[in-house]
Image (cartoon, rainbow, N blue to C red; front, side, top):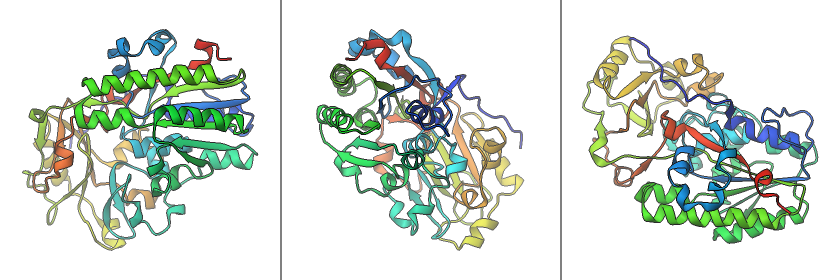
Length: 390
């Protein structure tokens, strides 16, 4: 199979740099500070799910607060797959997906052989404490005497993913964005050193209606106003930063590609995991660990997939992603979670398996998970410097 890797967008800053730098700025000496953040009494990190750099740039007319500081925005690159579960785990650990093991939206649980949804299906995992391959940076900061809080939606508080990626931090739930802003301020006032304010509304609306919809733009206006309120409510010495987990690409139904028509050479029916912008092809589901460990595609099968989708996608192996530095070092355990092939759209397509149609997925307008600049580039902004918070 002729290998051609997609190129990641050029950027000096990476999502994996964010938490080490934040905690280093708070005095956690064993952590590096690659972003060069100044010393702070406390840090508030605002993570706006789905607010890609290009999405923001296209919609600055609806974000007057951020428009006034857009010249200070730094291009930052998220991880592949550019999806929430992988990005949150990389943010929390400072590691690439191959190292922490949260490899995508739907990946294999080697203990059960099931392909599971990382956002809602981690109940399939018996030992959540061992699912993340490395400690979180919240845990490291906790050992150094620093207090951390995550302020998000109440319904996420008890989710297994929250337990995994936010281990070492307290979780506080509020429904309205304005209430989350107030709660973040309260946490700082109560002596919490690091607060992550999580805003998922833009991503949720993008999936349903797209990033050019009236609803998405209205939500951006609300987020912009909330950021202004946050920055004018905190005392001096508290640093406020803004970033995202990924960007979003609108994909019309005409760009949906059925990849299941191929005779792939896999015994039985191949199982599709990952996400439509970054498929993972599994040879087995519901198999014992040894069958998963032994699963492999022949060169002919890999070539068949590459030929079938050559006009629309790259076909790679997990080892290709490791060799290219995209996934980081993978343990044997983590390798069993990954598909035998990774299929990444080259253009603005979404790849589906028409044999097992999932209505909710096929109905999504906004998509992410791939390696386009629109999905991979995210903003990084030191809001404090720009606004002169009190």
